[in-house]
Image (cartoon, rainbow, N blue to C red):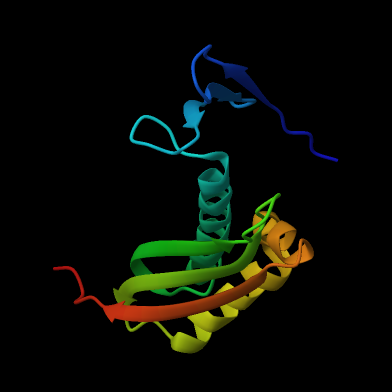
Length: 143
């Protein structure tokens, strides 16, 4: 079983905290979110987007798709009452590449959603409705 860890330290003012991940990466969290730090709930969305993006690009590469770019946008709707969990999440994938097969993209997203992305699975198990969409932008071959 893999163990992960993080430490969060209050900065002594408002709701501003410095976070350090087990990897050594550091960032600031604050509420409300602002330019100097995101909110914990925003970081949850970013974690899901990052997790599924890594899955999808890895799967597309294994399927020998010629991908030049991948952007994943995520939007979540929170419940009105505490604990204000996400009830709906929409993930949009924009794949840029040469003759990318839509079936390969659909399968990569499906595998990430149903098998590989642990962050997305946590949202689903908490009861959030997760929907995905994608579009492919054709890119001319280099050279």
